[in-house]
Every structure is written in C-alpha cells, then in structure tokens.
Length: 262
Image (cartoon, rainbow, N blue to C red):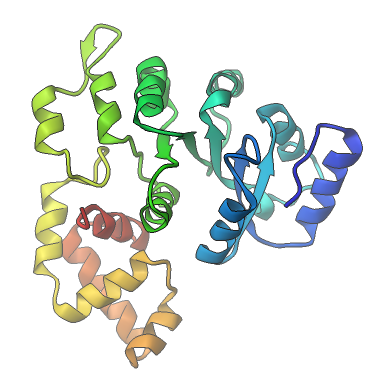
C-alpha cells in the first residue's frame, strides 16, 4: 500500500491510483507500524466496495483530499487518525469548521491509558465533531465489528475512557453510576436505548437471521440467496424489523443489532 512522503509527484501518484478504483476510502493517518499492511488488507477483505489508504499526516491527506481531479465517489468515508496526530486533526477540523460531510471520524489509541488521555484532553471536541475512539488492542473480530459500528454512524468511546468525560468544562457529563450501569454496552452513544432492546426481543427467529445478515453488510439479494427466499420477501422482513426496532433505515437497524451483542 502506498504511503506518501509529501512530494508533489507522490501526491499525483495517489490521485492516479485512486482513479483506477471506484471505491469508497477508509483512510488511516499515521505510521506503517501502527497501520500495517495487515491492517489495510484486513479492511479491504472485510468491507466490500472499500479501499484502504494510508497517509503519514493530516496535511498530506488534506492535499490529496482537496485535489480537484479526485472523483467525489472516491472521497474518504472513514478517517482513522493515530492518537499522535490528534492535535493536528482537531486543528484541521476547527479550521475547516467541520466541512467534511459524510466522513466518519475516529482516533486510534494503543491501550486504555491512551484512550483515557485522549478523552480527557479532547472530550469536548470528540463530542462536537462526533469523533470515536478506536482501541487498536482488541481482537480482530471485535475490532472489525467496532469499525462497522463507526462506519454506520455510531459514536464510540471505550468504557475505560468514559470516566474522563465525568467532568468537562466543570460540567458533569457522565456519572459514575451511569458508567457502572452500562459498562457492558457496545457503544455509549445512543446504542443502549431500551426501546431498541425491546424491539430486538420481539423479532422472530427468521427476522433475527435477516437482521444479523444486514448488520454484517450483506445486500438484500445476497441475503435472499443465503436464506433461499426472494428479494421481495427480504424487503418485507426488513419493513417489519424496522417497525419493531423503531428505526427508519437498515443502517440504524444494524447499529441496533450490534448494540445488543454485548
């Protein structure tokens, strides 16, 4: 995977490579040591229609991102930034006024201590810009599922880091009781909704099968083939599933499913 060094010819090479592939981008900002070839290949294997890219810093990514010849459909969909570049990410977002529509944001941390430090320092901006904190020390299955949640629009903070949100700007944001009560939840931001939990409990076994496949990123046609039914039947199942869950689209249904797996 190409890792630019900031030279003009290298930036041009990235653009040429991007034009060869009509896929959304999951972009990683940081060193090859943290975001290795294995990480990039894992993303491209686990996520259909996604291409993984890596840049050494925010400035280089921004230069390529803003390049006029880059097609819109090839823009970054998910931006994951090494914790060491968090300050530059915040400066970039402050400067742009969060003019990055459609891009999910996450800061990659190495361990619980790093997660707590990031939330303690940047808690207000994490909330303002809906930036998730992505632990890099999870097992592969949990790591991929967490990225799926963030890609679906969830705002994730590790439980260990929630204590750092207890007081931001002198205001109590998350109480100790709240943390203890929800310490096994998948995501702290909206995924613990009691209505969602009750909705999942109402699903039939077949509806649960359909929802599980939807949450895994399968399109309707693939789900229909796997369950040996028509695509129209899958649409009907989805209509009933969303009604029971109280959501309006398949992305929200997927988030609801993942929230109940903890």
